[in-house]
Image (cartoon, rainbow, N blue to C red; front, side):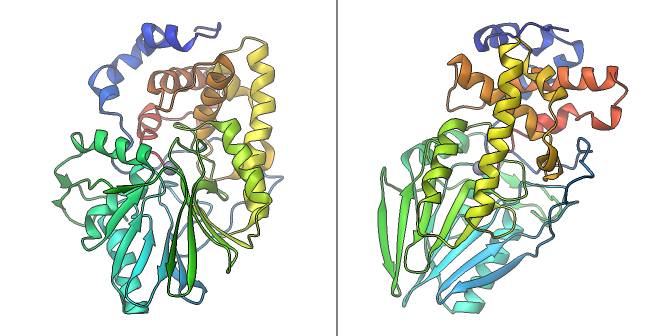
Amino acid sequence: MANRRLTRREAIQSGAGAIVGAAAVLAGAEVSRVSAQGGAVVATPPPARDPRFPLPPSWNRELRQLAPNVYAYSQGGGPDMSGPGVSNAGLIVGADYSLAIDAMQGPLPAKAFIAAARQTTGKEIARLVNTHHHGDHVNGNQFFTRAEISSHPYCREEVLKAVANTPKTWAPTPGVVEAAEPRVLVPPTVTFKDDVTYYIGGNEVQLRFAGPAHTWGDVMAYLPKQKILFAGDVAFFWVAPYANNSYISKWIETCDKIAGWDVDVIVPGHGPIGGKKELAEMANYFRVLGVEARRRYDAKMTPGAAAAEIRLGRFDNWIGPERLIMDVVRWYEEWDGTLLPDYNANAVREATIEYNAIKAGAKKTGQIIPLDRMVALAVPC
Ligand SMILES: [Zn+2]
């Protein structure tokens, strides 16, 4: 087992096969298949929880009115949810049409959202904003057939890159796809680099560029009159944040900036609706992890060994705790000066293999993370 930390370049050159033979099954085609728009998230036995701290709450899939003509479509979840990759959406209703924020991950949630929106408001969705390029926010674009779709240019570029590798058929997946049906990844057709404001039905909707944070192309929707923020994946509440395409220190800065805004309600990309307190907690996840990881980085530990050792207290109980590994890798890349917008699949895989080897050596096999689960983590949120 490699104890010396590899630079990103070395890791890419050596590949995970140099670490453990089992990695060979994931080499080549498997890695090239890895994209931001992959399939469903599968269940995994999570690393241990910390009994001293509370578990996440449970919440419902519902179209909830937050203010006149303003709705959040939250996906259901709770402490035992198997797929943290289900994402929330938003809806702003005008006199003639509605604007939707995010398209979700597949036919079932997208169609349910569109039907609920139509039934509740009587309006068609004529505009759709993609907060960023991850599949669980853009894969449902094809179902918003009457909507003009807009995003940051980086989001559009990433979606365009993923079009060729998108399967032609939706494969049945619990909660996402009921039966096979034609699939097409529809890219945004309007882009904006900075901020754009819509005035819809008496609501001022400011689309604000927030990146780089969760990705290099994050957009949030801020309604100053109602003090509501649809944060996209700049906010994860009770769900471990996914950082494979992130610039973590700048993400923390964005959270700190939002703390100074006039906001009462924050709709996160993942997790139950909350506010500034919950957003500060997510930033704290990264801060606590940053302190723990930095100590081990300075001691020249590898990211996998660091992740196997780190305990995060209350954050260990969040949904998707295995994301600790990718988040450590991402911190390391920032400190190494090797951070890129793209997901470093090799580094995350290598760290996962080492993490598992350490857990197995310590006979903590219940904390082993299946490698296919970490490959599935290329299915982002
Ligand atoms: Zn995301």
